[in-house]
Amino acid sequence: MVKTIAGRRWLRIIPVVFITFSLAFLDRANFGFALAGGMAKDLNINAATSSLLGSLFFLGYFFFQIPGALYAADKSAKRLIFWSLISWGVLAMATGMISNVYYLIVIRFMLGVVESAVMPAMLIFLSRWFTKSERSRANAFLILGNPATMLWMSILSGYLIRSFGWRWMFILEGLPAIIWAFFWWWLVEDKVRDAKWLTNSEKNDLEGQLQLEQKTIKPVKNYAQAFKSRVVILLCLQYALWNVGVFGFVMWLPSIIKEAPGMSIVNTGWLSAIPYLLAIIGMFFVSYFSDKTQNRKAFIWPFLFLGALAFYGSYLVGVSNFWLSFALLTVAGGAMYVPYAPFFALITEILPRNVAGGAIALINGLGALGSFGGAYIVGYLNGATGSFGASYVFMAGSLFLSALLTMVAVKGSGANSFNEIVKEDSGKALTFPINQNFK
Image (tube, rainbow, N blue to C red):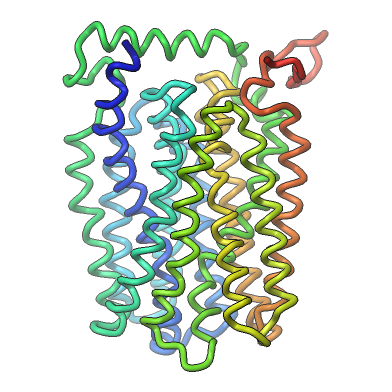
């Protein structure tokens, strides 16, 4: 019966979460285009301040991850995301109206605060609607909102800045989030039980399947025990290093491309979109085979390693060949994005529901610190050295370490290798023993 309602679940839920997550990334990533398109000059923003502003979002994002995720898990992801949509739309529009950098500092921090719970809340939401065999693909469609938005936003922002200026770019790109909030409220429900478009029999079958999956996971008493576990700690470090590369890339790619000889802001937008097109294609394939094989690990670390090699290759090429360097950056950008879906599917499959939301928030919060470091340090290195080579090496090293930590943290194929999640051993700290014979 679960399979008979699968089509309706995908058509009813996935487009809504995709659009919602897309709007979140629209209002966080267009800042890099504004800097390259005149904001830095108009507001007298120097290189150091530019790095700080680019990273402040992630500082606010870090501090409010866990409270927001706990609210989504215990009360309502639907309500939390509704108010977040309105708040970040208002703040994004306000960015186009400010007159000095001090207001911008406050807005960038607050934008991170109101968007902080969206990612964990969405993952919690999807875990209540899709079974284990579907979850990587469901997560992929959610996370596709990131590269898909970066693709069309890169092109649109270039044209908006050229036609109307950076202020109107923020205003026009912030308004859709406010409007969409009311569609979100009308279209989704927190729980399967509340869905009017399912019969009682269909609700019972889907809830029964989801509850059966939870029975294979040993319970964890509380968040403190889960947060002390080896696997959660390692995944926090892994994701932080991963995001150093991702958001160092996202925030500064427009500026990197704009520095090429004769490059206009419109051409910068078109070229900036290419890595995200590659990411979208890759995410479809990776999520499909991750679900088909139930092997999460094999679809995470190899791509992080590939991204590290591509960044280092771009450093070796340097300024001698812009197009070869750009091709390598495209590979790096695509490779960093494609493992997201199996990574977050892994987390919801190795931890029981009562602590999964908090663990996602903790891991995503540490990822936000990595994003803060990536956006700030890459900007600092670019300004201090007068070139992008040092930042390429920095991002390559971060991704390489992230790939290594993935191999250490997950010692089986992934979700199925954790047949026993917790074990109390003579009152010792929580551990996560791994059963190698998972099949």
